[in-house]
Amino acid sequence: MLRMKTALCVAMALSLFSRAEATAAFDLLQQAAVSYTGSLPCGGWDCECAFGRQKSCCCIAQPLFELEEATFIRMVGLWEGLSHLNSQIEELTAGCKIAFTAAMLPMSGCLGPFTSNVSISYQSVSLNQGNGYNPALGTFTAPHAGLYSFSFTAYSRVGIAGQRLYQKVQLMKNGQLMASSWEDNREDSEDSSTQTVLLQLRRGCQVYVELMSGRQLCGDTQGQNMFSGYLVYPFSEQ
Image 1: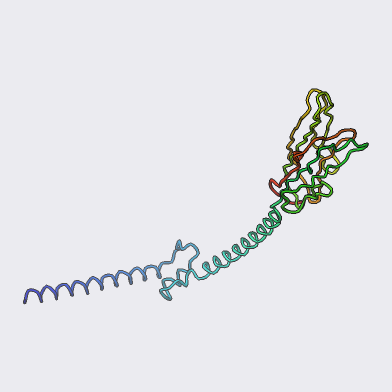
Image 2: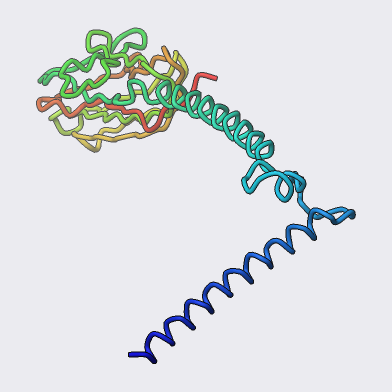
């Protein structure tokens, strides 16, 4: 029992001695730093504050304040940039669901011939997202600027061998020819063709299909003459 008490007293004494040594070492370092007259590599810190006045971070208060201010200003700039980007995205994606598909009403006779080019009215509408297509006029008006894909099918059947297939239809953009399809022979009694084109449109541009003067489309009893289009991707008017 006596040995245990003795060992405990020795351990406590060593502990107190170690603490005293550590305190003395820190005091020596503090005194040496305060009394040093040369320049210290403090990186802008207030070394006199750190070693002479108090044990705190007062030496970096100003740099921290400047860093906080710069960070705040940068965050404000980032927020403004994100808000502007969000506005652009909303502008570009507004009304992006644009697509239509329409066909001519079934007929046993012929459309044409006419003495001038005539816009074809595809009145059987199965899809008109964005309401860009007008079935009464057969005209698509772009609700939004972007790249569009258009397809049209020209079908004709005369039904009698030796009778002339004489057709020509063309895709128009604001009155300008973009694509066409035609047939002129007496060997076939039935014929069809399909064209697909990509067009860059501004808002308000008009696209339609017209039948050339002197030509005709006949015998479309199942509505195989079709006109369709959709927005591939939008772009800014600028």
